[in-house]
Length: 151
Length: 185
Image 1 (cartoon, rainbow over the protein chains, first blue to last red):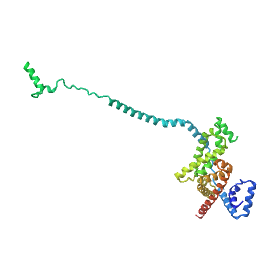
Image 2: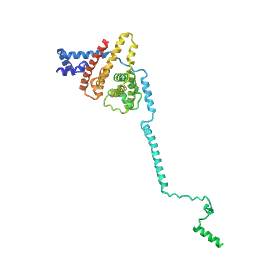
Image 3: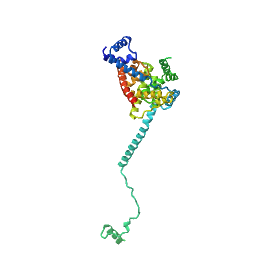
Image 4: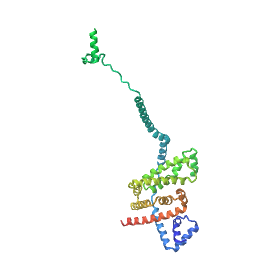
């Protein structure tokens, strides 16, 4: 194997993930190649640096918190129902609004088509013009005067 | 009783066996989250969310892979999502974990060095790409084999080898320069 191939195998070599034959091949190469040995040395130094890194521990109440969260989630309404609620409520309101507008338009058109009969208003039983002097030479004046002559 | 037997019991309605699965994996999930997110508090929240997710998904879990592979896959994906949104929010990092180390120190000098070193390692890890970081965390800190990592990440074993090698080289380079800076300052 050449240096390029060996370097690809340095990680599994450090981690002892190679089979014994490969492990030996890499070891032999490293003994004769200064450059690859330097790369290996860098990787080993890195391993030392990573060695002391902190490891956290779950606290004693982790399980309790998880179980509480699970049961709280189970008490919630089903996602399908909550989705329906989210979608249904605004849909119903919207449908109501549309229905109202359509009904209004329909009613408006109905009243528009029916002829509106003006109510006749009889504000007075006697025509006010009756007591006014009749215009001279008019048909009404002639009629009234003829009647008066006959009487 | 192994994981698969516990999962089988859970799927047959014995929900209490979930407690055993949590107790078995809580530290591993927490530390995976901690390395990938870089913040202790958020890692604890993420670990809790992961187990809640697992509880609800366990009934539909098809044992094509082992339970641990499946769990690590969920954990890594969730933690990377949290890390991404954390990066977006670009919050200042919490040093709770490091501070805890100082607090319990019988030898303050050694603890301070450890704390600084831990901080530098985490900073260096955060400079890796998501895939390289996940491989380093799962292998170096969780002790998973190349094959297990390949299964979790849906990649080949040789991809794991080459990505891990590149990640190690990059980490060594970053840490070398940051250590030099730290020592000279």
